[in-house]
Amino acid sequence: TSHHLAYVIYTSGSTGTPKGVMVEHGNTVNLLHWSGHAFAEVEIARMLFSTSINFDLSVYECFSPLVQGGTLHLVDDALVLMQGAQDVSIINTVPSTITSLLDAKALPVSIRTINLAGESLKTTLIRNIFESTQTQKICNLYGPSETTTYSTWMQMHRADPVTESIGRPIANTRIYLLDAYGQPVPLGAVGEIYIGGVGVARGYLNRPGLTAERFLADPFVDKPDAKMYKTGDLARYLPDGNLEFLGRNDQQVKIRGFRIEPGEIEARLIEHPAVHEATVLAREDVSGDKRLVAYVVAAPAVDGTASDEFVATLRAHLTACLPDYMVPTAFVQLDTMPLTPNGKLDRKALPAPEDDAYVRHVYEPPEGEIEQALAGIWEELLGVQRVGRHDNFFELGGHSLMAIQLMERLRRQGLGTEVHTLFASSTLADLALSTHKVLEIRL
Image 1 (spheres, rainbow, N blue to C red):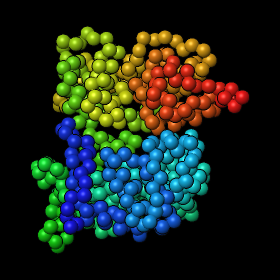
Image 2: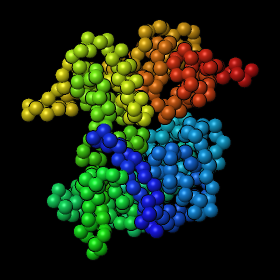
Image 3: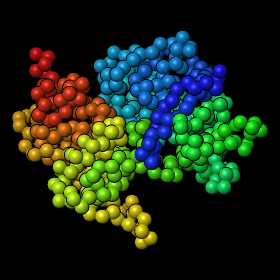
Image 4: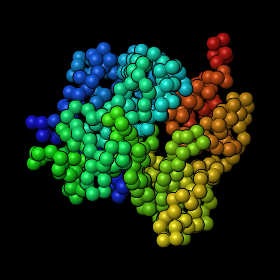
């Protein structure tokens, strides 16, 4: 029946334990039903399928074209798009990925519709997409896993005014903006987003207490079993009836579209015997990208450990127990955590990470023209100083989206290598061995 369980998807948990969201068949069918009416067959005929099955977007990417007779175009990673062989009509991703693809001129020319979600969408990016590609429609979508991927959407065509709004509810979905007392806020006032309707999932697997806390009875509908989900997100209604997203009312963050509870990372850090206290937050780097930074007070027994050794130990510990996107880019070692006058953590007083906050190896200067060129690009792209031959791209804060930017910057300097090489040969010296002057390759 529609109430049978379709899948369980896990999201980050503030207590250190991921939450398994139980999504039923009825929830999923409603999403696919809406998609079939929201997108024309020609739009959804050839969908890029690049999302890991660990994320709920993969369900939408897989089944929304199939139920309309469309086709899937599978890629292992968005980086494969750089090869230019993908004939797809629609792509679902996050704004930061699209930004990187645009910078690298790697977005397939066949794409006509771009669905963006998971991060705030800026008008500058919308204009850039329309001006530099043949895209005909951009959709800004919003929704947590607990309400089956998408709950609101805003579509923009080339002739439409651009807006950062997340739009209005999808089919059979209700959006409430409520105050601290559970009452609707006036037009234009900020309220917390509560979502009701067919898309609301069953709850959290084996977490009855948390389910009762976040999945509430819907008092605005005359149905005894109606539920609404308390999102923790803030928004307000614009005069035209569309929603403006205003961020979180807690510490949850989204980085490159991944929903992250810093408390889960903190819990894993505290488990390590070398750590006495830990705090994790998201900071913007010089380019405006968000990065996770861990602030750590070492246990007394290891207080004298060299900074680079300490950072390498913590990074290895988290890499073994967390997905890559949850491993902080930088680790800042503190003597004590800064506190406010009333004894609470003063997050604003936490310092920006310096060069020793990254995993660094014994410095050996770059050798030869290619290594020196690579080092200069890394320093500029990663925002670090004095990159050595044995430094690792990913340990210095690089990720797959930056890999796209790296390939483009190499191209501008007349150099070339394969994208997959970076993942297998991540140190400067190793990558240089497979990097060649493009003119030499053509000869």
